[in-house]
Amino acid sequence: MVMSHPLKVVIAGCTGRMGHALLESVFSDSALVLHGALDRSESARLGKDAGEQFGKLTGVKLTDDVEAALKGADVLVDFTRPEASMIYLEACQKAKVGLVIGTTGFSAEEKLAIQATSKNIPIVFAPNMSVGVTLLINLVEQAAKVLNSGYDIEVVEMHHRHKVDAPSGTALRLGEAAAKGVGQNLADCAIYAREGVTGERTAGKIGFATMRGGDVVGDHTVVFAGIGERVEITHKASSRTTFAVGALRAAKFLAGKQTGLFDMQDVLSLR
Image (cartoon, rainbow, N blue to C red; front, side, top):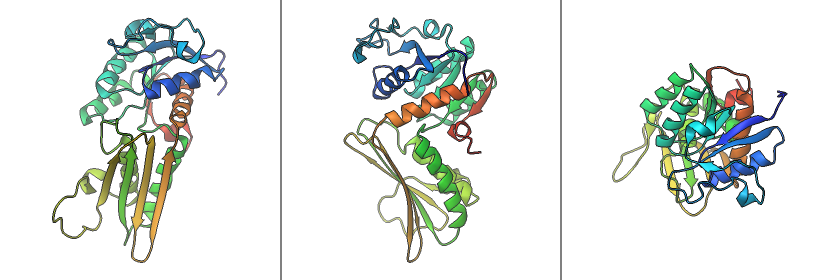
């Protein structure tokens, strides 16, 4: 899509790992311009130029004033925590600004709030903004349709030691894709923990295994284990840049849209 002017982007959580990757990606894309930079009220960098750490001056100061940052903006990109995301959701609705949400760990009630708000502003909401992971979700659903009998499904994921939610939002989305492929709802067939004498594996269940450690950006594997063979579909992220690039692609996708709830499948025209 061709835009008549650079898309005015606000980045939330600018001093975090994803915030840093998003800023760097905005600065390297001529179709985007940094309009606002948000961070926590206790951040020591409030009031400093958002481009300072990259050796450039943008005139955009880091702030915790959401309303001021959104004034005149086109879209906010948010990879923070659910409690902060709910504040941004309300502020974007008030300011009529589009929203890209890459935050994970939302409750069912918070997800319903996001869905309700999308009737007033356009939102891309996805647990993983990677183009590769988006394709992986499609592949998992297709594989589950074919391997829908005689194969046990397990979702295995690993992330860095600082990640606070488990299983990851991406792992859950992959589980949903697998469940859809076999004609089930994930809530009815998911197994999130095993300990002690669990008995034999029940057919039709989707298991999850979570690992945390080091600086792993994000590894996901969906295993289809049959008798005599095993099919594994894997995605490994080595840099947060892949998520940043996907998120900013989602931001461009929202340009010109007034309302609606979308995910990366929509952004990449996979449905």
